[in-house]
Length: 414
Image (cartoon, rainbow, N blue to C red; front, side, top):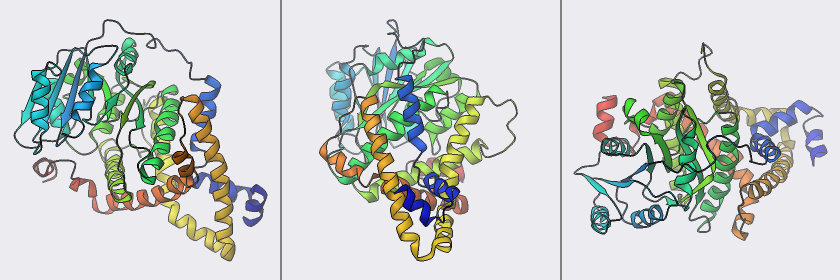
């Protein structure tokens, strides 16, 4: 297979290696091999339990009647009990408020804050943070389910005084529902479990996930909380990094969340994530500038991770395919097929190693999905990102992000 691809590339080793780079073959392989060598046992000062931690949990909820009760139930079963649970009903039109109030009357929730109209996730979190009493704030989506040790393990990361934020590992609740969710389950295993675990080793975590993140309350309040515009999780994490704080990823703290179960919903979600990321990184933080004096090495590494392994391959991908056609002509489909086989072998190796390192079990559905995972990750998502990045560059599409309420968008962007 390798020999066939090399022959088709005209015995040009550079062309073969560049093809592997373009299709994301090596991105997680090196991370996983490095983690295997470290055996994920790199002990930090915050790995032992933090007995005296006080954690205020904030759950913003918008039309979340379907999952809110289960989220609260898993929070009540923590080995480190939360000091308080605050639910913010952000202008819901379903039974969310009634469910939250019922949980409060039963003693499962300490405070319920109700917004008459939707203000957005950031505004909901910022409002609740003003009433929180814990030293640490845990923010979670209303469909996030927690393993019993999640809070304790995340709080342990804050033994290091310079740590201002931490995020955790994420598994997919509905992985077995459709092929779309199965592919996302594998993607989360690669991008969260493998990718962020390695980025944590080099202190290059760029974003604390909205599904579940923890912050020092005094730092959170001193910085004025989350930005109310698009991409607030990434923006706040980058803001903390610029201020010199350390961001951690706790690989053995787990939550599960539901993901889009059809291609249309998935592509809409990723379009929002990608355009917001490009806006925050390029316009708000100027990460593509060559002039970053006094920048710390971890910040340089997190910028290069995005630019070299994400943005650059995505933007040149269509032009690379045109180049291949010009170089190989009629042999292009055969070359791409041989590259796909190479991607598949490496991908199966990556998935197997990740399952071992993170104690995950691959079901039959996931194994079947793994056969087309290179197509999903290396081609479909890359083409979708190209369309999203192009629309953001040309039309500033993030200004119309429907995740942010219309009146907030008008106030921000006129």
